[in-house]
Length: 106
Image (cartoon, rainbow, N blue to C red; front, top):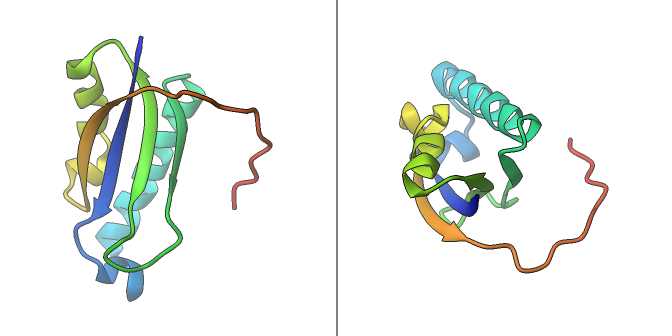
């Protein structure tokens, strides 16, 4: 298994500043559930987003995959990517150091 990272950016900044359309809200909910399932399946390691709502805003997903083709399938099947709400860029990645943390999700 290798590690990969995909970088996510919203395709419509107003989704963050003014609120999403009904379709965007539904798709972002599907995106969250997809990533939650990836965590529960032991595929995703870490995911989150910056707490800015401007053109610098991005999210990341760090995950395990057999190879780059498999990693691309995981990324491309993310509902936010599949439905064009977010763009994604894939990178080979390797965690160098990590500590166990108690993360409190909102």
